[in-house]
Amino acid sequence: MRGRFLVLEGIDGCGKTTQLRQLAEWLPDSGLMPDGATLHLTREPGGSPLGRALRELLLHPPDDAAPCPEAELLMYAADRAQHVQRRIRPALERGDWVLSDRFSGSTLAYQGDGRGLDRALILDLERIATNGLMPDVTLWLDLPLEASIARREERAEDRIEAEGQAFLSRVATGFQVLAAERNWAVIPADQRPEEVHKAIRRALEGHVAFRRP
Ligand code: Z5A
Image (cartoon, rainbow, N blue to C red; front, top):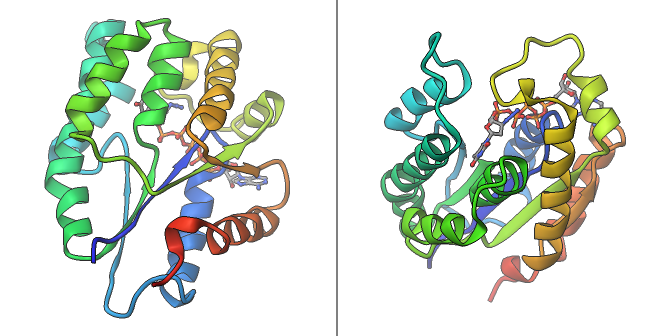
C-alpha cells in the first residue's frame, strides 16, 4: 500500500520546525502508521542534495547573486521536482510516510501572493514539479502576523524574511485563501507548543486519509 504524505505550511516562524519534531516522536507509535512503515522528515527548499545547494542560493545568496522573482520561482520548482522524484515518491512507493516542512502551497503564497507572479504560471510549474503528487494532508499553522514578527525578533533574517511586513501580510492572506480552496486542516498556532501539537493530533486522528481499511 502506498504511504502517506503530510505537509506543514504557514508563514515564517509559525512553528513548523517545532511541530515537525513533536510529530516525529508521536507519529510512529500513534497507531496511524502501519507496522513496518518508516517516517521520513524533510523540508523545502532543501530536501535533496541538489535542493540543499539551491536552498543556500535562495536564502543566503552571495553578494550580487540574489535571484530575480522569476529565477526564484524556477529555483523553488527545481528543488521540488528533485525532491519529489528522488525522495518523496520512492518513499511513498515503499509504503513509508513522508512529513515535509513546506511544499507547493508555499510557492503559491510566497511567489504568487507575496511577489505577485502569475498564478496560472505557478500552477503549471506545480504540475511539472510534482508530476501530480499532492499531499494527503496539509496542516496549516495559522499564526497572526504580529506573533510571527515577535517570535523572530532576536533572530538573523534570511533573504525572504527580510522582505518586510507588507510582503508577509500578502503571504499570510495567500495561505488563508489556499487553506480554504485546498481543504487544509487549520491549526491555530498562537498557543503553547503542546496545545498546537494536541490540535494537530486531533486533526490527524480524525482525518479521512488515515482511516485504516
Ligand atoms: N519559500 C518560498 O518562498 N517558496 C517556496 O516554494 C518555499 C519556501 C518552499 C524557507 O525558509 C523560506 O523559503 C521561507 C519561505 C520560502 N521564507 N522565509 N522565511 P525556512 O523553511 O528555513 O524558514 P521558515 O519556514 O520561515 O521557518 P522558520 O522561520 O524557522 O519557522 P518555523 O519552522 O515555522 O518555526 P519554528 O522554528 O518552529 O519556531 C520559530 C520560533 O518560534 C522559535 O524560536 C520557536 O522556539 C518559537 N515557537 C515555536 N512554536 C511556538 C509556540 N507555539 N509558541 C511560542 N513560540 C513558539
